[in-house]
Structures are given as C-alpha cells and as structure tokens.
Image (tube, rainbow, N blue to C red; front, side, top):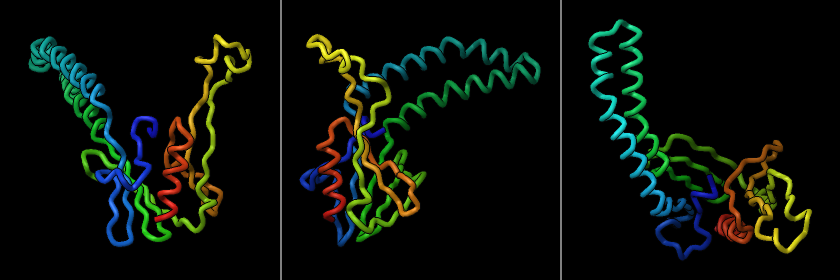
Length: 189
C-alpha cells in the first residue's frame, strides 16, 4: 500500500521521523482528508442500509428456524463489521525501525502491532530500487504525441534482498527520487 501510505523522505518531517538514542523510526502518513469524506459517505450508506433491514431481520431471527437465525445474525454481523474494516483501513500504519544493522518492519492497525518482521541490513547494496510495470506500455509503443499522457509509467519498489535470496518489499512509490531519499535516510542512520 505504499502508493497510499507514504513514508517521509527527510529528517525534517518531525511528526513522522523519530530519532531517539541510536534508533530511527519512520511512520507512514495518514490518508488525505478526501478519503475521510469517502469513509463518512460509506458509513452513512451502511447506516441507512441497517435502518432499512433492521426490522425484517429481527423478525426473521425471532420467528425463524436455526438457519434463518444464523442468516439473520450473520447479516447483522456483516453490516456491523463494515464500518470497523473501513476505519481499520484509515488507522493502518506501517513503521520502519532501524537500530544499527537491525531493520524492522511493523504493521499496525488502530495503533496495535499485528505483524512485524526483523532483518539484518549489512550493506547498502541490500536495498534495491526497481521499476515495476504490470501491463504493456501500448501508448509508449505507439509513440504519438497524443498518447504521452496515457503512458504507463508503473511504479518503483524499494526492496531488501536477504542473504537467502528472498526479496522483502519495504515500500513502493510512483516517484523514484522519493524512494532514493528513503533509502538514503535508512542507510545513513
């Protein structure tokens, strides 16, 4: 989700770059405010949907057999969990921690860590920036001036190559220079 959750690229971004003792912590930015408007609209639609189906579902639960009760409760559970999943998307955070040669990736939802990985970063060459294009670039193949705006430029990935040959995705971005600055920030601290 690197294209949505952007990492800081300089130490001057004090709210998202924390340096204490010999440890560096990089936190992703939150989503832009327009996404919060989308979330509010989606939650309102789910609320109106719940208000519309509440009475028939409660009647189905009270009068039906076991299958109807199961269907009713599962529908109510689904409608109740949709806002939770939407807000989990908004309170998702990825962190990069670096202490000497120890590089850690943490994934958090609502501030709670739900997954983390630790790697040893021995040399700068382990961090590799590559270009990723997942579809043919037909507009570039035609090479006409009208199709320049439609050229698929793909995006770039910053990966950690382990000694075992495994590639770990650290971040992705549509601007290569931002990933180079992020790599420099990680390596130099």
